[in-house]
Image 1 (cartoon, helix red, strand yellow):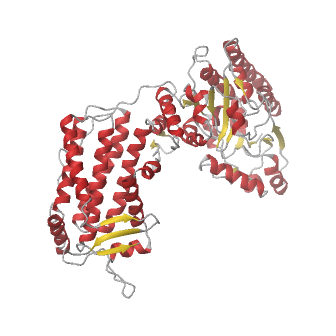
Image 2 (cartoon, rainbow, N blue to C red):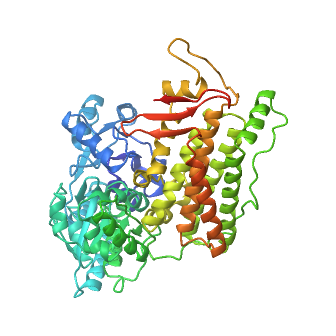
Image 3 (cartoon, helix red, strand yellow):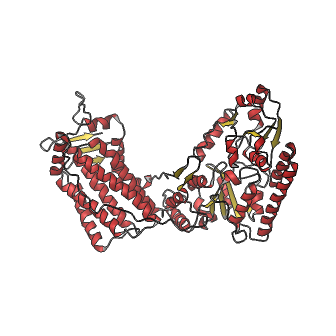
Length: 614
């Protein structure tokens, strides 16, 4: 008998009954057991499941409204090697291929296969489906044995949690928009010793207003998005921070928000639902069900550090600040050890480029001579940063690592910018300076939110990818726009640097041909001629950002800075502020209407100072 499984849970049932050799076709989502991955894929998805939750929901909605299918069938494979039996589902047209997706293909291909349609709503229905598949494949005895073992495990969970206090539990099977779980999930919560709302056991999943879910005041929230593993659920949980009252939920205040592997243990109505039930028992009543779940299957999204962050977020929210969410490891593991790190002993300004062209050497000479006061201040600022790093070398915590990661990049961006400045490579400087702004803002945002988002990233950041035999690193995209919006100096510089770094027509002309007019457009390609205006602008940004980095480091409890070091920093910051306030230097002013005015823009010392508005 040749069998096609058009449902991941059916594939798991077939293999559990010893029918793996007879399976000749599976869906694009069938990944368990591992042998299923060796079978021909006979379905395709028209949905990009790699997108974020909200984008996936939009794709599904758009296709439904247009009357278009979500899945397709490999009709050529159907003709070439037709099955004798097809196992499918008629429960949810979003989760897997349904009869409406392939009925036309069967007729076109002339396939006369028998169809077994599964439509479970409760755990008992899932067990009946196992028997149904066993009967259709002459494996009823094996099916009965499997069902008996699953019932025994279900009864063990029920007995272990009976008589215990029953916490209110909200299970979310989608995150953006949030959608509570239905079908068998409310029953699983009840068996695990909890109370589930707002959807009753056996009822289909549906969208429910967030206000109704919030009014339930869940004491435990379990994130189990359909098709997501625990790591992805934890990563994408940040979208929940936008919900009104999210941080006021009892579950958030108690640190009992969990991300679980919904794809493996909750969404698929097969034998592994019982693994999911045992996992819920562990989450709801760890003292009554001490057995640890499968590795990587559950990640609480709130622990002691996260609870502190939740309180801080609540305080910030009352002030109108942005929100974040978080995740830490299941058993509150010790934070990873931070290895000793290396750093330069001293920073020195770029030396004369002896092998460079005469033009570049001349630019270096003029830069070092005409900007000597600025460059001296910058050199002192860079070395003061190294002094703080050296004084803090023994403080190696995850929080220190988070800050140092951004700080190290800031240091490199500023150092490289100074080198490019000395060579008159002015157009290459704004992107580096903009990146430095980002990294300084990121440090300040981490300090403000108690490292909540960093702990979420750290819980799932590093691992192994078996498919590609590679180490996996989650980049953890982090934005700190609110800091840039709140800091007038940093934000103004960031906005101007962003414009100069973009391929705008005007900024390109301004950087490569600043002497152009409406009558004459001057051209230049990779020019390295010294320009006093550009040099002073970039040197000013270097001082501004180096000062901002020093202020950020000194404000962090994660770094050591004795009284003497702080006094040196105070004197240096005052000198840098005075240098930037010099009215004769080239500087940029933000006018408030989206335009900028550059003062004292000139190529040479003897040139007439100009003002440029853009």
